[in-house]
Length: 78
Image (cartoon, rainbow, N blue to C red):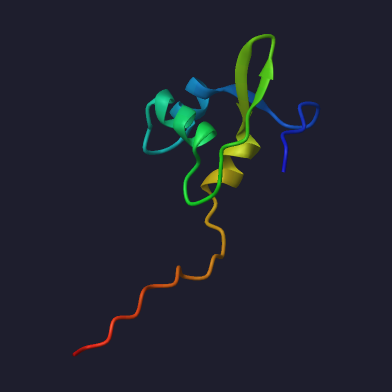
């Protein structure tokens, strides 16, 4: 889902970092934006040369999706 700039509350990545209870560094949010975590990326928009996210996008990113457990390699005892 993309950020709807007309309906969502835009905040800077620094403000987003400060709004998260664990207070990650803004560079952590940059990594979440670029590389993601477990296949999910933090949604952002570029407006006027500045990178923004939204309160709603942060909430979507931090919510735990219902993913099935990753398959583990089964090893047989010899």
